[in-house]
Image (cartoon, rainbow, N blue to C red):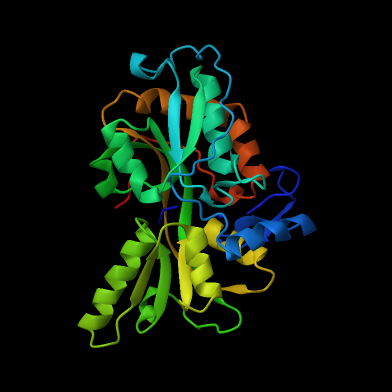
Length: 320
Protein backbone atom coordinates (compact mmCIF):
# COMPACT_ATOMS: atom_id res chain seq x y z
CA UNK A 1 0.00 0.00 0.00
CA UNK A 2 1.08 3.30 -0.29
CA UNK A 3 0.46 1.49 2.13
CA UNK A 4 -0.78 4.39 1.88
CA UNK A 5 -8.50 8.04 2.75
CA UNK A 6 -11.49 14.88 0.82
CA UNK A 7 -12.25 17.94 1.61
CA UNK A 8 -13.70 18.60 5.02
CA UNK A 9 -16.32 21.07 5.97
CA UNK A 10 -15.44 24.22 7.82
CA UNK A 11 -11.71 24.51 7.19
CA UNK A 12 -10.78 20.93 7.92
CA UNK A 13 -13.13 20.05 10.76
CA UNK A 14 -14.38 16.56 9.94
CA UNK A 15 -18.00 15.56 10.06
CA UNK A 16 -19.43 12.73 12.13
CA UNK A 17 -18.20 9.19 11.65
CA UNK A 18 -19.97 5.97 10.80
CA UNK A 19 -18.96 2.34 10.46
CA UNK A 20 -17.75 1.25 7.04
CA UNK A 21 -15.58 -1.30 5.28
CA UNK A 22 -11.96 -1.67 6.17
CA UNK A 23 -8.82 -3.79 6.14
CA UNK A 24 -10.08 -7.16 7.30
CA UNK A 25 -12.33 -5.53 9.86
CA UNK A 26 -14.72 -2.60 9.89
CA UNK A 27 -13.07 0.71 9.04
CA UNK A 28 -14.73 3.84 10.35
CA UNK A 29 -15.60 6.39 7.71
CA UNK A 30 -16.96 9.91 7.89
CA UNK A 31 -20.46 10.80 6.85
CA UNK A 32 -20.57 13.69 4.46
CA UNK A 33 -21.96 17.10 5.13
CA UNK A 34 -23.26 18.92 2.05
CA UNK A 35 -20.17 21.05 1.79
CA UNK A 36 -17.93 18.03 1.21
CA UNK A 37 -19.31 17.75 -2.31
CA UNK A 38 -16.97 20.60 -3.15
CA UNK A 39 -14.05 18.39 -2.23
CA UNK A 40 -15.08 15.58 -4.56
CA UNK A 41 -15.30 17.98 -7.46
CA UNK A 42 -11.64 18.63 -6.86
CA UNK A 43 -10.91 14.90 -6.80
CA UNK A 44 -12.84 14.10 -9.97
CA UNK A 45 -11.36 17.07 -11.81
CA UNK A 46 -7.91 16.28 -10.40
CA UNK A 47 -7.70 19.83 -9.14
CA UNK A 48 -5.86 18.52 -6.11
CA UNK A 49 -3.48 16.95 -8.60
CA UNK A 50 -0.88 19.47 -7.61
CA UNK A 51 2.49 19.16 -9.22
CA UNK A 52 5.01 18.14 -6.63
CA UNK A 53 6.80 21.40 -7.23
CA UNK A 54 3.70 23.29 -6.10
CA UNK A 55 3.74 22.76 -2.42
CA UNK A 56 1.37 23.87 0.23
CA UNK A 57 2.43 23.60 3.81
CA UNK A 58 0.86 23.54 7.20
CA UNK A 59 1.66 26.41 9.53
CA UNK A 60 4.66 25.23 11.54
CA UNK A 61 3.94 24.11 15.07
CA UNK A 62 5.44 26.38 17.69
CA UNK A 63 8.49 24.72 19.21
CA UNK A 64 8.38 23.84 22.87
CA UNK A 65 10.69 22.00 25.22
CA UNK A 66 11.09 18.29 24.52
CA UNK A 67 9.52 15.85 26.93
CA UNK A 68 12.18 14.37 29.25
CA UNK A 69 14.32 11.80 27.45
CA UNK A 70 12.85 12.58 24.02
CA UNK A 71 15.34 15.10 22.69
CA UNK A 72 16.05 14.68 18.99
CA UNK A 73 19.62 14.52 17.67
CA UNK A 74 21.35 17.86 17.26
CA UNK A 75 20.99 17.79 13.46
CA UNK A 76 17.19 17.99 13.84
CA UNK A 77 16.83 20.44 16.71
CA UNK A 78 16.28 23.41 14.40
CA UNK A 79 13.09 21.75 13.15
CA UNK A 80 11.74 18.87 11.09
CA UNK A 81 10.94 19.17 7.39
CA UNK A 82 8.18 16.64 6.80
CA UNK A 83 7.31 15.42 3.29
CA UNK A 84 3.83 14.18 2.38
CA UNK A 85 1.90 13.51 -0.82
CA UNK A 86 -1.23 15.58 -0.20
CA UNK A 87 -3.58 13.59 -2.44
CA UNK A 88 -4.60 10.85 0.00
CA UNK A 89 -7.60 12.03 2.01
CA UNK A 90 -8.33 11.70 4.86
CA UNK A 91 -4.72 10.89 5.70
CA UNK A 92 -3.07 13.86 3.95
CA UNK A 93 -4.67 16.29 1.52
CA UNK A 94 -5.13 19.96 0.68
CA UNK A 95 -7.82 21.87 2.52
CA UNK A 96 -10.38 23.86 0.50
CA UNK A 97 -7.99 26.81 0.31
CA UNK A 98 -5.75 24.69 -1.94
CA UNK A 99 -2.70 25.60 0.13
CA UNK A 100 -2.99 24.19 3.64
CA UNK A 101 -2.25 20.49 4.06
CA UNK A 102 -4.48 18.73 6.56
CA UNK A 103 -5.38 15.17 7.56
CA UNK A 104 -4.73 12.43 10.08
CA UNK A 105 -1.00 12.19 9.35
CA UNK A 106 -0.58 15.95 9.56
CA UNK A 107 -2.27 16.17 12.94
CA UNK A 108 -0.17 13.28 14.20
CA UNK A 109 3.18 14.70 13.10
CA UNK A 110 2.32 18.10 14.58
CA UNK A 111 1.44 16.43 17.88
CA UNK A 112 4.70 14.48 17.79
CA UNK A 113 6.64 17.67 17.08
CA UNK A 114 5.13 19.27 20.17
CA UNK A 115 6.24 16.36 22.34
CA UNK A 116 9.71 16.42 20.77
CA UNK A 117 9.98 20.18 21.22
CA UNK A 118 10.78 20.89 17.57
CA UNK A 119 9.13 22.99 14.88
CA UNK A 120 7.38 20.97 12.17
CA UNK A 121 7.08 22.18 8.56
CA UNK A 122 5.05 20.03 6.16
CA UNK A 123 5.83 20.11 2.42
CA UNK A 124 3.94 18.53 -0.47
CA UNK A 125 5.98 16.05 -2.52
CA UNK A 126 5.43 13.28 -5.04
CA UNK A 127 4.97 10.02 -3.16
CA UNK A 128 7.78 8.24 -4.98
CA UNK A 129 10.13 11.16 -4.26
CA UNK A 130 9.82 11.10 -0.47
CA UNK A 131 12.00 8.14 0.53
CA UNK A 132 14.84 9.14 -1.83
CA UNK A 133 14.47 12.65 -0.39
CA UNK A 134 15.04 11.29 3.11
CA UNK A 135 18.13 9.42 1.97
CA UNK A 136 19.54 12.56 0.32
CA UNK A 137 18.83 14.83 3.28
CA UNK A 138 16.18 16.90 1.49
CA UNK A 139 13.56 15.86 4.06
CA UNK A 140 13.81 14.83 7.69
CA UNK A 141 10.57 12.82 7.98
CA UNK A 142 8.20 11.10 5.56
CA UNK A 143 4.62 11.10 6.86
CA UNK A 144 2.54 9.86 3.95
CA UNK A 145 0.74 6.58 4.72
CA UNK A 146 3.82 4.49 3.99
CA UNK A 147 3.46 0.77 4.48
CA UNK A 148 6.43 -0.46 6.47
CA UNK A 149 8.05 -3.13 4.26
CA UNK A 150 11.34 -5.01 4.47
CA UNK A 151 12.41 -3.51 1.15
CA UNK A 152 11.78 0.05 2.32
CA UNK A 153 13.55 -0.65 5.61
CA UNK A 154 16.74 -1.06 3.61
CA UNK A 155 16.55 2.65 2.78
CA UNK A 156 14.86 4.27 5.81
CA UNK A 157 13.79 3.46 9.35
CA UNK A 158 10.09 3.31 10.24
CA UNK A 159 8.10 3.88 13.41
CA UNK A 160 4.80 2.03 13.06
CA UNK A 161 1.64 3.97 13.98
CA UNK A 162 -1.41 2.59 12.11
CA UNK A 163 -2.72 -0.42 10.18
CA UNK A 164 -4.51 -0.53 6.82
CA UNK A 165 -5.30 -2.94 4.01
CA UNK A 166 -6.01 -2.44 0.30
CA UNK A 167 -9.50 -2.05 -1.18
CA UNK A 168 -10.82 -1.82 -4.74
CA UNK A 169 -13.29 0.62 -6.28
CA UNK A 170 -14.81 0.97 -9.73
CA UNK A 171 -17.07 3.25 -11.76
CA UNK A 172 -20.75 2.96 -10.87
CA UNK A 173 -21.63 3.69 -14.50
CA UNK A 174 -19.59 0.78 -15.87
CA UNK A 175 -18.67 -1.44 -12.91
CA UNK A 176 -16.53 -4.55 -12.89
CA UNK A 177 -17.29 -7.45 -10.58
CA UNK A 178 -14.25 -8.83 -8.76
CA UNK A 179 -13.52 -10.52 -5.46
CA UNK A 180 -9.77 -9.92 -5.16
CA UNK A 181 -6.43 -9.78 -6.92
CA UNK A 182 -6.94 -13.05 -8.77
CA UNK A 183 -9.85 -11.47 -10.67
CA UNK A 184 -7.79 -8.64 -12.18
CA UNK A 185 -6.72 -10.66 -15.26
CA UNK A 186 -7.76 -8.79 -18.40
CA UNK A 187 -8.71 -5.59 -16.53
CA UNK A 188 -7.19 -2.10 -16.49
CA UNK A 189 -6.20 -0.79 -13.06
CA UNK A 190 -5.30 2.80 -12.11
CA UNK A 191 -2.80 3.09 -9.25
CA UNK A 192 -0.53 5.71 -7.74
CA UNK A 193 3.08 5.32 -8.79
CA UNK A 194 5.46 4.00 -6.13
CA UNK A 195 2.74 2.35 -4.01
CA UNK A 196 2.44 -1.24 -2.95
CA UNK A 197 -0.81 -1.31 -4.93
CA UNK A 198 1.24 -0.65 -8.05
CA UNK A 199 3.58 -3.51 -7.10
CA UNK A 200 0.66 -5.83 -6.33
CA UNK A 201 -1.07 -5.10 -9.65
CA UNK A 202 2.15 -5.81 -11.57
CA UNK A 203 2.74 -9.01 -9.66
CA UNK A 204 -0.80 -10.08 -10.50
CA UNK A 205 -0.19 -9.22 -14.17
CA UNK A 206 2.76 -11.61 -14.23
CA UNK A 207 0.73 -14.29 -12.47
CA UNK A 208 -2.14 -13.96 -14.94
CA UNK A 209 0.21 -14.31 -17.92
CA UNK A 210 1.96 -17.32 -16.38
CA UNK A 211 -1.45 -18.98 -16.10
CA UNK A 212 -2.19 -18.27 -19.76
CA UNK A 213 -4.77 -15.60 -18.96
CA UNK A 214 -4.97 -11.99 -20.21
CA UNK A 215 -2.66 -9.71 -18.27
CA UNK A 216 -3.47 -6.74 -16.07
CA UNK A 217 -3.11 -3.34 -17.71
CA UNK A 218 -1.48 -1.28 -14.95
CA UNK A 219 -1.79 2.49 -15.32
CA UNK A 220 0.53 4.48 -13.02
CA UNK A 221 -0.49 8.02 -12.06
CA UNK A 222 1.42 10.68 -10.13
CA UNK A 223 -1.10 10.79 -7.29
CA UNK A 224 -4.36 9.21 -6.13
CA UNK A 225 -6.51 12.06 -7.47
CA UNK A 226 -5.32 11.28 -11.00
CA UNK A 227 -5.97 7.56 -10.50
CA UNK A 228 -9.52 8.37 -9.34
CA UNK A 229 -10.08 10.49 -12.44
CA UNK A 230 -8.90 7.64 -14.67
CA UNK A 231 -11.72 5.48 -13.28
CA UNK A 232 -14.48 8.08 -13.45
CA UNK A 233 -13.47 9.06 -16.99
CA UNK A 234 -13.42 5.45 -18.20
CA UNK A 235 -9.68 5.22 -18.93
CA UNK A 236 -9.34 2.50 -16.28
CA UNK A 237 -11.86 -0.04 -15.04
CA UNK A 238 -10.96 0.16 -11.37
CA UNK A 239 -8.47 1.46 -8.85
CA UNK A 240 -6.79 0.16 -5.71
CA UNK A 241 -5.85 2.18 -2.63
CA UNK A 242 -5.46 1.82 1.11
CA UNK A 243 -8.81 0.88 2.59
CA UNK A 244 -9.40 4.17 4.46
CA UNK A 245 -8.57 6.10 1.28
CA UNK A 246 -10.65 3.92 -1.04
CA UNK A 247 -13.65 4.03 1.29
CA UNK A 248 -13.40 7.78 1.62
CA UNK A 249 -13.20 8.43 -2.12
CA UNK A 250 -16.26 6.23 -2.72
CA UNK A 251 -18.15 8.08 -0.01
CA UNK A 252 -17.32 11.46 -1.53
CA UNK A 253 -18.16 10.51 -5.10
CA UNK A 254 -21.91 11.16 -5.02
CA UNK A 255 -22.50 7.69 -6.41
CA UNK A 256 -19.94 7.84 -9.23
CA UNK A 257 -17.67 5.27 -7.57
CA UNK A 258 -18.54 2.02 -5.81
CA UNK A 259 -16.54 -0.38 -3.69
CA UNK A 260 -15.95 -3.83 -5.12
CA UNK A 261 -14.26 -7.01 -3.90
CA UNK A 262 -12.77 -7.73 -0.50
CA UNK A 263 -9.97 -5.82 1.26
CA UNK A 264 -6.65 -7.64 1.57
CA UNK A 265 -3.17 -7.27 2.97
CA UNK A 266 -3.49 -5.53 6.33
CA UNK A 267 -0.07 -4.11 7.20
CA UNK A 268 1.47 -1.38 9.37
CA UNK A 269 1.97 2.22 8.33
CA UNK A 270 5.29 3.72 9.35
CA UNK A 271 6.67 7.19 9.98
CA UNK A 272 9.79 7.24 7.79
CA UNK A 273 13.05 8.78 9.02
CA UNK A 274 16.58 8.66 7.56
CA UNK A 275 18.36 5.36 8.14
CA UNK A 276 20.40 5.24 11.36
CA UNK A 277 19.78 8.95 11.95
CA UNK A 278 18.99 8.60 15.65
CA UNK A 279 15.53 10.04 15.02
CA UNK A 280 13.56 6.78 15.25
CA UNK A 281 13.94 6.29 19.01
CA UNK A 282 12.69 9.75 20.09
CA UNK A 283 9.91 9.52 17.48
CA UNK A 284 8.81 6.20 18.96
CA UNK A 285 8.90 7.69 22.45
CA UNK A 286 6.83 10.68 21.35
CA UNK A 287 4.28 8.38 19.71
CA UNK A 288 3.98 6.34 22.89
CA UNK A 289 3.45 9.60 24.77
CA UNK A 290 0.52 10.76 22.63
CA UNK A 291 -0.97 7.27 22.81
CA UNK A 292 -0.82 7.37 26.59
CA UNK A 293 -2.28 10.87 26.93
CA UNK A 294 -5.16 10.23 24.52
CA UNK A 295 -4.09 12.58 21.73
CA UNK A 296 -3.51 9.71 19.28
CA UNK A 297 -7.01 8.30 19.76
CA UNK A 298 -8.57 11.76 19.46
CA UNK A 299 -6.83 12.42 16.14
CA UNK A 300 -7.88 9.09 14.63
CA UNK A 301 -11.46 9.61 15.81
CA UNK A 302 -11.49 13.13 14.35
CA UNK A 303 -10.63 11.76 10.90
CA UNK A 304 -12.86 8.69 11.11
CA UNK A 305 -10.10 6.08 10.97
CA UNK A 306 -10.11 4.69 14.52
CA UNK A 307 -10.34 1.10 13.23
CA UNK A 308 -6.71 1.36 12.11
CA UNK A 309 -5.38 2.20 15.58
CA UNK A 310 -2.53 0.18 17.06
CA UNK A 311 -1.38 -0.02 20.66
CA UNK A 312 2.19 -1.28 20.35
CA UNK A 313 4.29 0.85 17.98
CA UNK A 314 7.74 -0.44 17.08
CA UNK A 315 10.75 0.53 15.00
CA UNK A 316 10.92 -1.37 11.71
CA UNK A 317 7.93 -3.60 12.21
CA UNK A 318 7.48 -4.83 8.62
CA UNK A 319 5.62 -8.12 8.30
CA UNK A 320 7.03 -8.91 4.84
